[in-house]
Amino acid sequence: MAKSSSQKLTEFTAADHPVRRLRRFKERAIEFILFLAAASSVLITLGIVGILVTESLPFFAHVSFKDFLTDTEWTPLFENAHYGILPLVCGTFLSTFIALIVAIPLGTVAASYLSEYISGNAREILKPILEMLAAIPTVVYGYFALLFVTPILQKVFPEMGGFNVLSAGIVIGIMIVPYVSSLSEDAMRSVPNHLREASFAMGASRFQTVFRVVIPSAFSGITSAYTLGISRALGETMVVAIAAGMQPNLTLNPTQPAATITAFIVQVSLGDLPHGSVGYQSIYVAGLTLLLLTLGFNVIGLWLRKRFQERE
Amino acid sequence: MMNLVDTSRDPILKDIRHRKMVDFLFSVAGLMSLLFALITLLALVLDLSITGVPRLNAEFFMNFPSRFAEKAGILSAWVGSFCVMMTTAFCAIPIGVAAGVYLEEYAPKNWMTQLIELNIVNLAGIPSITFGLMALGIFVYKLGLGQSILTAGLTLGLLVLPIIIVTTRESVKAIPSSIREASYAVGASKWQTIRYHILPYSSGGILTGVIISLSRAIGETAPLITIGALTFVAFLPTSPVKESFPFVSFQWLSDPFTVLPIQMFNWLSRPQPEFHVNAAATGIVLLMMTLLLNGIAIYIRYRFRKKMKW
Image (cartoon, rainbow over all chains, first blue to last red; front, side, top):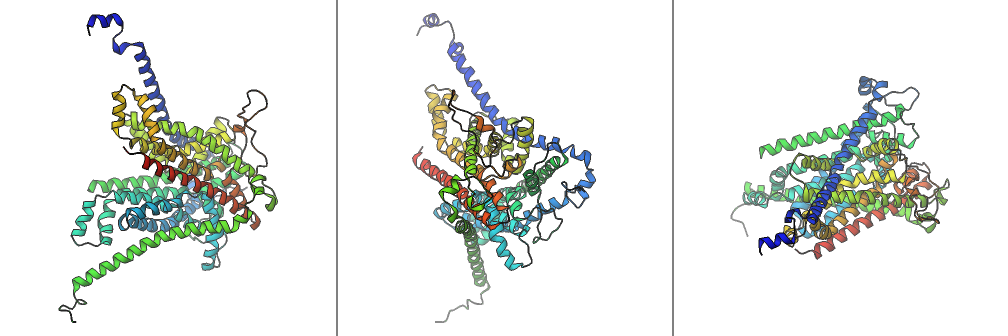
């Protein structure tokens, strides 16, 4: 092809052709739109943190920070209002603690079993069934806690009332088993096989291999599984709102009714609170506290992971 | 016959027996933990069914809630749930798929991408009720959308966005680069490659993610209570079809609403056991929808895995 004839055919060099320029512009525009979609996820976080902080700040004009942290009563909707967050935090920790006592042993054992003891085919069937526990709506779990688990527990603790933290905690625990087991199992299965083979070659049993080789190697992934489980338990709302009664109660006795941070937010939202009132601000303060608690546990999890990874 | 060595005294053999014992006990514990989960699942379904199934009849689906337990139904709740799900899907799918495609196909390795990725991981750990608080502050009061179906759909859309993004990324990632290279080799641009190859081939995975996110959204209660969804609704949203031009109306988006889980919660928080029967029946409906959606998702994933052979 002669150079002169091709220049006669078109005045533009290939890269400058209007069709190409248009196409390039279109490609750029599409990339930018897709970028905006991805960046919008950051906006969600900013929106949540921003609105929680800005709606909480006016609250501390009414209530001193010291009262908020040390007062042992939380009665923002009463005539004689007290604004001590402790009873709510206590209820949240208590229900989370009970949930973890159930979920961590069950989830970890189930994960080890699925990952180390059974064949791939059985796993393909059992894992989705286990994960179905996480798909059930939480309000259905609330029904289960209130009308199935509590009556059973009342046979063991006859003096226990219809609303208690114990049944709510146990049911939350069952609910988060799949979160713990699924991620833990993924982590355990990604441990390279030669580590297991080395362990077997040294004469270790399967149980010893699981606990001394596989779990320590998968520690980082297992920690993230636990962290996610804790986050879920802290933020769980409907089960505690239905089964634990909604009374702020500074107690560590799980057979008593109590309110968690989330249950309080639900309780207030069910009523009709004017925008800007102290009651309205109090749910944002509660939400901010919940977010900070969740963040705290996630930071601890991250720290544990980092610390362990350095040793590898 | 007598053994040459007395095995019962040999410390090594004793140790081996002990280890095998522990090993066996642990496998029993593993089986028990799985069984416990299964039994719980069964107990939950059976308990709901025994109480609720007799209540499931046509009137239950066609009646509004009522002061009288036996006349009450879930008409406004299931219509509300349906409208909210439509809105959720409409707002979450385009953004989620676009974000997933961007992160997998375009995103350069820089701090912005890292920030977005870290953020998506962390969104999964944020309690759902704080999404409700954000929606109450921003959508209801700052933007003045009110306690409407639109607000609810947006809230749940944001809540399930990370699920859609993550599943989109996974299914886009699974497409081998030879497909992209073949497309570029015949002169397709990046967007054409995505539009005509990446998106169609990953549609099975994306659809699975969308269905799973909807099954999550349909049972979500707390954020909708927080934005102030009503618990007693005896009317339906405005019809989307009008008699005069332009024949479609979006008035329903700004109507107040209730959804199935809120209706169930409302009945559950009443002291009378007759209302608990209604709650159980609503629970069965919810459970069936969730399990059905999950079943469809598993089936689609299975079908696509069989069909796609790179």
